[in-house]
Image 1 (tube, rainbow, N blue to C red):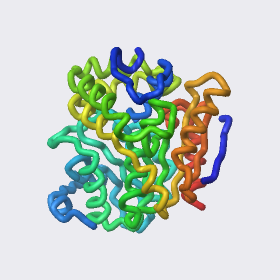
Image 2: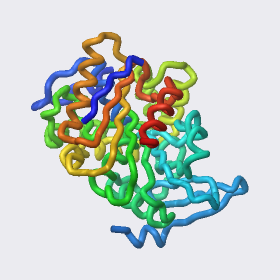
Image 3: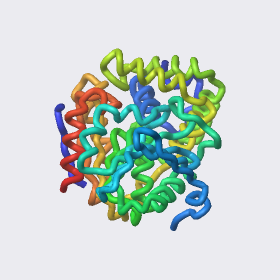
Image 4: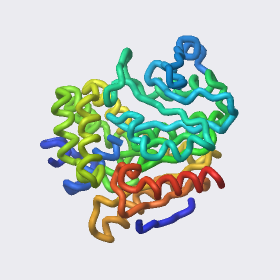
Length: 329
C-alpha cells in the first residue's frame, strides 16, 4: 500500500459495549458519520430507461436509479455513488469537471434524500443491481467514485466483482466501519452486531424530522459551511427511516478487508480528518485507515487534514485533482 499525508450526543445511551474498546464522544460521532458513511438477467430485463427533454437517460434498477447524459461518443464511464441519506446533488460541485472526458453516471439510492422508493433496501441486492446496470449499458470497466457508504459499495465491487470495473475511488468510506467505533482493526463483524442492531432499531423508530435532528447533532463533523450543513440535514429529513436503519445495519456488518487483498482493482481512499484538532488525532485516524489496507498492494491512502467528511463540499478542487490524477495514471 502506498502511504501519503496531505496537510491540507454520544452515539446511543446505555448500549452494551462488551468486546468493544471505549470510545470518546467525538470518536463515536465520527463513526456514525462514517457509516452515514455473472449478470443477473431478471434485473436487466426489468430495468426501465427513459429520456427526458434535457437528453438525460434515467434508468431504474430496483434499489437505485441512474441518470446519465445521452451521448453517441464512446467515452470511459465513471459512476458516482452517494452515501447514506444522500443523493447525487452531493457531486454537483465536481461532476462537471469530469463530463468532458468521461461518460458520467449519477446513482440515486431509493429511500435516500427524497429519491422515491418502491422496494426494500438491500446492500447485497444493490451490488447485484449495479452489476446488472453495467451489463445493461454495456459499460467497459467503468470507474466507480463513491462517498462514505458509496465508497464501501465501490470497494465491495472491487472485492467481489472486480472483473466488471475499472478503478475505485472511495471518499472517506472504509472497507469496514467497525474499527472507527472501536479504534482497533482487530474488530470483527460479530463484535459490531449489538451496536448495529441498536442503531437499526433507533433509526427505524424515528420520524424524518428526528432523522434530521440526529444528523444535526453531529453536523460539525460532516462539513464546514452553514449552507452545506443545512443541505446535509435536509437530505436526512427527506430520507426514509426504515431504509436508513436497514442500510446502517447492513453497512456496519459489511467487511471486505480480506477479499480486497486479492483484488487486482486499483483503489484510492481519500480520507478526511478535518473535524479533529490535534496532531495525535489526525495520526490516529490515518493509522486506522491505512491498517484497513494492509496487504492490499494496489491501494493508495491519502489523508486530508483540513476537510471534513463531505470532502466535495469543503475542498472540491483538491478532491477533483486527486481523482483526476489517479484515473489518469
